Amino acid sequence: MSAYKWEIVPNFNDARAKCKEERDELGNITKIEILYGGEGGGDGKGHGHWVAELIDGLLQVVLDREPDSAGGRAQDRIHSPFGCL
Image: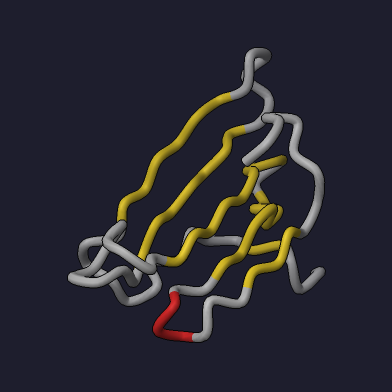
């Protein structure tokens, strides 16, 4: 399995992480977005941002940006059919 494909949605050890799911217009792909690790947890200042698309039971990571406290490194993985993320 590719390093960019996951089988489970991570929680990033943040009980206050914010998770949002959105299905595409045809219902074939689900976008999962998680904001985590910000000041005070979740989507606070300096939060991390993780976005993946659920396709055929696997999560294809689209964006992986660490929280500022972990260096803030960001990597765009692939282009998304959802447009600009």
